[in-house]
Length: 388
Ligand code: T4K
Image (cartoon, rainbow, N blue to C red):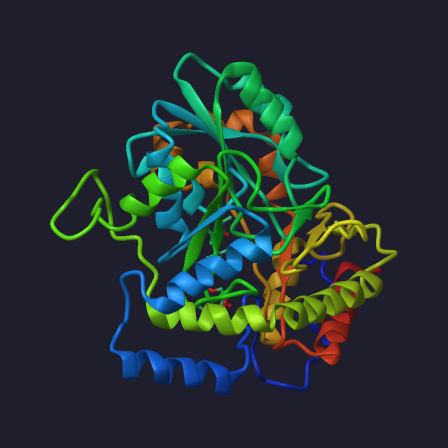
């Protein structure tokens, strides 16, 4: 802690030594999961469009109200497949304030990610700034929904339409969320979900692509299975993006508990919001809107380093000292990571809002492994640390 800090001695101490994580996996009904695992072992059908994967795809399509869902091994490969199937090339505009996979999925196939600024209110891509970045080489925009909220879908769609660009969404954080009453999964040309262990709805590793475009869905289905259209018949370039049966078994089990998982997240979210209110140095990212659905899967605060007695990093280190493993997602911004930092060093100068935001954000633990007492402790700790 720095000299601005009120002193570790005056900060609350946590009694438990159990670690609290951002992204501690939620586990649904274990008996149902074990029964499904027993079944898949008995069937000796472990992957390659097995019955659980097909059932999960159908249930997800129903839940999202979307025509096609393609289950995948993770969201990164799903993004790569969608980008390839949509024929993106040249330059594609993405926010820098995202998990590095969004940009890597482009760079991996020789496409230049061009980093757009965020709207400081929502932390998501600002359509006006995105429009300023369009060049003759631009073919698309990848919008990213963050924190259980949705980005400015209408604004980005308008920019894409004006310039004949393809719009894809990284919806890794937005499974179970809606915008203007429509579930995420229905926007743009396609949307990609992550079902990684750290997501509130998980399949161990996994992801899915949702789209209402039948021919795009067919293309992506082929691509995720090496381009095979039946035995011995390869009709396109492809990769191995398949979800395994054990992952689908976890997904089906998680889906049965989804309402309870969201209810727990929502309760934690509201408790954090109450516990952190009234501190000028702390902004709780409040995206709660009764008219919309959210998964409430991330608790995000911004610490005003000038107003607080301790900086964001001091507070994070202090929390780690109490076994509360808060995270500073998405520090230091993708444009400051390799290879982007070296390929385009000037981007730093062009993204002042993102540069400021990565110094302020702190993501706090939530989910079924976090108790009311844990939330109360974390709020008390932050209040004491900022000197409120
Ligand atoms: N787009 C966006 C916007 C994303 O956020 C992500 C992934 C993707 C795309 C790509 O999706 P995938 O290809 O992964 O499906 C974690 C996750 O690995 C990553 O999936 C996620 N975003 C990102 C936001 O968070 P790390 O590097 O922070 O993971 P790690 O290992 O530090 O784990 C986070 C915390 O969770 C730790 O405190 C430990 C805890 N944990 C983790 C695992 C795996 C557990 O308690 N149990 C576990 O099994 O990236």
